[in-house]
Every structure is written in structure tokens, then in C-alpha cells.
View 1 (cartoon, rainbow, N blue to C red):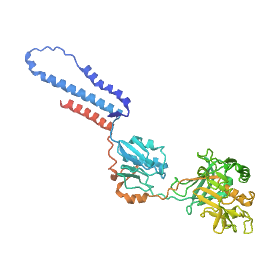
View 2 (view 1 turned 135 degrees about the vertical axis):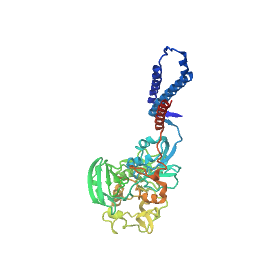
View 3 (view 1 turned 90 degrees about the horizontal axis):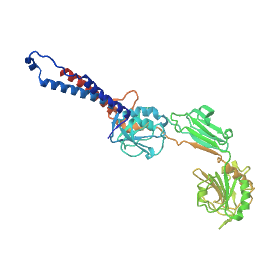
Length: 487
């Protein structure tokens, strides 16, 4: 099926009537001529009249065809052809600068329509070559795998390339160095470090430049300098790849904290615990079967010897305190693990003579926990860390809620909970040189200045339908001229 990119030009086809009108106007009426002798009639033969009439009709037809061919060229006819498969590598590395290298690679593709596939399985069907750059202009980057289909891969070449594609298009560029930035959060600061790779650091408060450091590899950002509920962006230029060089920091004005108690008769004691840990919501547990309507940063579980799954999956910091102990063990000599940094950071004056909690009986918690209190080799209380979540558990009842031990736990529960840090996933090293070495002659390179002879497999002469129509128009005119001259 034939279509037109500029169908409005088809109205110009009426100009094909112009040669016909001129032909009709140019016809002269027959006039009687006085002939003195009939002998001169022999020089005028009927065949000559027919031949001139046929020549005029052929020239007229060629003129009409020439006009129609020009009109078709202006209307840009297109024939539906099978779409070719094109895989676009929208890896974050280099994707922000895609306009710079896509404009060099796309001219290497033949004209026509393409089924475009991107990372993660996204598919765009029947995209014309001329529209590819516009379609990809706003398309986001992705770290999802590339689709495993046969076709032409168009890539910046940063990520490793698999040998599963029919052909490869890469830009000519230098190998990029990518520095790794580590992030450490303490009570009073955020420390950013790129090792031996020094560079320029810029910190933005919203869109405004806030702080700047030059020619350094490590910076410390004091949390006291940050305003609550504002997003700060820290960007380092220690390498040539900007896609993973931004760290976002947000300090919350208030950490949302909740206390859950198990039984109704525990409500009064739970209220006292809530004051110590500065929670703003007290909730009676009622067999959570649905996700929590409100998300909290910290949750205190009072009277629990288990952690409900909805709470476990929705909070960052958990403190679990039992009330009624079942099958508790009689303790011999509870002692503190003073080597744990908890005591030096939060429990002021901790020493072998300090009055840490000394329960008479307790259950034992997970033996892989970071021990705070022990009885022999068994752990009575400690921390469990999993992913970005922090959990404190103890196997004994709270005897004195005002004990400095629980004040220290309160301070621990606030640690880092009021600061959110977002980092881009590190993109690793540039695999451009490895890809070149691996595939060699299979890779076709894009250059804006010229197309090398090695690229002729894809960079074919772009004879589109409009140019073919113009060629036919010139051919019809040339034939008409030759025909008039010879005949």
C-alpha cells in the first residue's frame, strides 16, 4: 500500500492539465488553400498527417507524466515495507549525551521503518528512520537487560556487549574513567570520598549553589548546616562520567515514630515507654492483615516476642520488648559487651562497675546478633542488621524505664533516621575497549564528518521514493525533447 508524507501536494496534480490545455489551444483550424494544379497533391500524403498527430500526442503524454512525477516527488510517496529490528542501548552511561552520538550513528542506517527495542523489553513499532531521534529524545535510561533478539544494536559501548546481534553501531570515542564515591553517615555529618581521585565538588540547595570544594577527594557535610525537608544535591567531577556522580541528601524535620502494644492491660506501661522513646502515635496491635495505612520511620513493640510482618516490612528501625516471659532461663551473671560501640557512643560512663540492666531471668535472642548484654555465651539483648533496616531485641522485661540504658537506646533509635541519602547505582568501569577487542570488524563506527568505507554495509545510498520520482520527471522531459528533435 502506498502512502504520502505530504499529501497536500497532490492537489498540484491539476497542473497536469496545463500541457493538455496548451495543446488544445495550439491546434489551428483547417484553412482552404487554392491549388492551381492537382499534381501537387501527390506531395502531401495522409501518412504524414497521422505521424505528426501521433508525435504530438506522445509529447503531450510525456509532458503530463513529467508534471505528475514532480507532484509525486513533492508529496513524498512511501511504500509499506517490512520493518527492520533496531536495539537501542539506553544504558545510563552516555544516555544524557545521546544527542551528540546518536546524530552520528543514525545516518548509517538504511531508510525505512524500524521496530525499536530498548532495555527492559520496551518495544516501539514501525518508527520511521527520520523520527528516531525525536522519539528517543525524552526516553529515560535504564539498567534493565537488553532484549535478546536478532537485529542491529546501537550503543554507546559503555556496558558489556553480548555476541547475539546481527550488527553493531558504536560512536568513535575515548575510554571514560569512572571514579567510585563512598558515602558514610554518622550522627553529625555525611562523609563522601572518591579515594585518590580529586576533583571539583558542588553542593546545591534545590537549584541554587550552596557550597563548593575544589581539588579534593573527600568532603564532610555537617548535618547542622542543612535545612529540614529540603533536598540537597552533591555532585563531584572526579571523572568524565556524570551519570553516577550525584548524591542526594534530605534531612527530615521530624521522624515519625509509633509504639504498638499487644494487650489492653499493657496500655498504661506502654504510655510510659512512649514518653521515653518520644513516639507520637500509640497503637494497640490487632492482627495486621492489611498493609499499614501510615508508614513510620521507627516502631517500638511493647509486649511482643515476635515481629508482625506488616510492621517488619514498613519501618527502618525496630525496638522489641517482651512483657510476659515464657520458658525464661534463670541467669547467673549478666554482663555487658563493653567492646560494642553502643556503650561509647550512647551509654555515657559505661564501665564494669556501671549499673547496666541485670535481669534475673530472660529468653535468649538470635545468637548471630551483635551482643549488648550476655549471660555466658548466650545473648540477652543486641542488634540485628538486615539490608537498610536496624532491629534491637531483648529477651527480658523492662524493670526501670528511666535507666540510662534505655535513654541510650532512644539516642540510638534516632541515629540516621532523620536523614535520607539517595545515591545513583555505581555504573562500574567503561567496557568500550573490551567491546572493540571482542568484536573487531563486526562493529561499525559513526562519525559526523564522513562515512568510512568500512560502513558501506549499512550506509547505503539513500534513494527514497521522492528522488526516484524526480528522476522519472527528468527522464520524461529528456525523452520529450529528443523525440521532438528526431521526429
